[in-house]
Amino acid sequence: MNLTQSKVDASSKGFQKLQLKAYEGAKPEWRMYAMETTSTGASETYDFLNGLPGMKEMGGEAAIRNISTSGFTIVNKEFEATVGVKVADVERDKLGIYSNEFSEMGSDAAFHPDELCAELLNKGFVNKDYTNKAFFAEDKKLNPEDNSNKARKFTNKGTAALDGPSFSAARTSLRKRTNAEGKNLKLGKKLLLIVPPALEEVANKLMTAEELNGSTNTLRNAAEVLVINELSSDTAWFLIEVGKNVKPLIVQYEVKPMWAQVTNLNDSHVVLKKTFLYQVYDRKNVGYGMPQLAYGSTGAG
Image 1 (cartoon, helix red, strand yellow):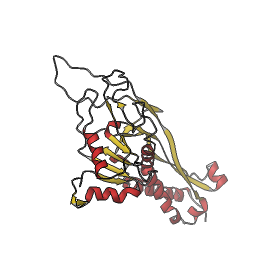
Image 2: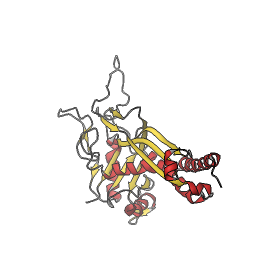
Image 3: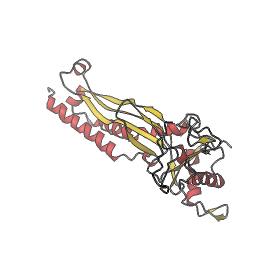
Image 4: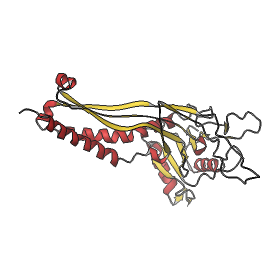
């Protein structure tokens, strides 16, 4: 039988429906600890309010605290997933063999930032943020431009393995964080404990057990546990403040996932390759935001 363009178009609509259903039904985890921003160009430069200034009493006139120029730039990258569908399979109505693949394309587009954010955590003890130090490091200046002896600093890196005392130390570190003016940031009220699969049992026990070592577990429900499979270290763990509007990591979108296709029977690719093309494409990238809201331990001891 001859394949008609109307049949091809109907099949394409079915494929796109599968993609969109999977994309819209996905529940990516990055939204728990990263904030989404919109980019209007090839890159965006972020200038941070050093340490979230907060309110203060007005003395005569407003004390203007300018946005710091110690920012950094996130350059957008192009990402795509493209599959080919044989013309003969559409003609023979053998479309069921592609259903799972198109559903996966939709869910992959939604979950891809999860992978990128996991990589940020993996490299967080090495890669630098706007403070010009590694995202997880010791003696980080709240204002990198302040070279005075009074420059306020904080440490958001540890080396202890995950246990009760090390978790408490990390939570205390977050609770004691201040802005560049010394005002407490009121952190530690809504926490996310991020661990690799190797630490899942330890983390869940710390956060859910009624007793630890024969005593009442005072850490119970102190944080929600998130297990990230893509974490490369079996010992590293992270404690993140997620109760603020800002988050420690950034997912920057210039172009949200969009679906494209080459399905015209007279298109040169279709004529020569006897294959239709279906693609999901976006432009985005990830980067470090506010290290004040995070604590990371290598767990190496």
